[in-house]
View 1: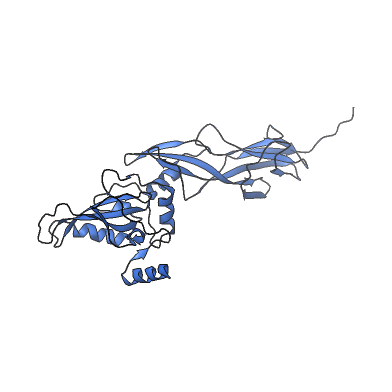
View 2: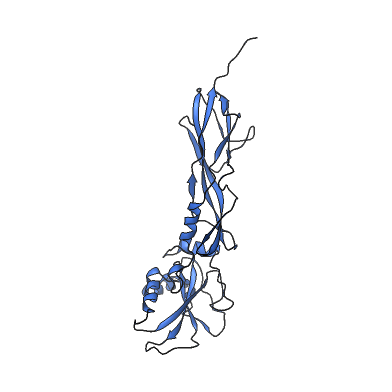
Length: 295
């Protein structure tokens, strides 16, 4: 009943609430204050942040504020001991499930009064936590924020290793009606699963660690297998096998679906909420008939 009432009140006040999370107390002393018990759950939209920035411009009538932010995974407020690293798994997931989703990561938005409407300077005003936002780059004074859009761009720009088909019998030659074993292999060029690609974005060091989640096998005779999470294996234990019924030369390849993890400035590894499929290198498999000779 309490959550339902909170939703009704939020709708009445024109607010949006996150789908997850609970109200939290502000614990950084008397200069920190919250704007209501459910401030931790109120979503600050992109439009609201633009309005805050516009109202703060010189010459615009009204009060003026200083804005700040803290991590979704932090329990403190702005100040000396605040956690200023916004990247944690919860901050990413919060923006995936928010009613007003944005690029993320989710951060708490804070502000304090600096000038009265008549221009009088205000000193010692408390910080007020307004709520959460998935648009950290729109917080006044934080235009260079690293967002999930930047991370996803780096992920898609990663020079992934193009998978190749390791085939047994070896030598790209097999026999009609003989099971042929397939396994996924990677060249030395590009980043294969588990390797780390490092780049710099807006002054932040971003590490991308690819992970293979699915494979699609193209056998060249108009048949495919997958997507499957099976990378194949060698004879005799490999479970990705294909038998050719006719001799010929068949273009074969293995495509890999990548996801991965990232970290910022050496922080915790966080799952990337996206995938990309990399087409493998095509090999020409020669399928021949066995020849019986009498001696």
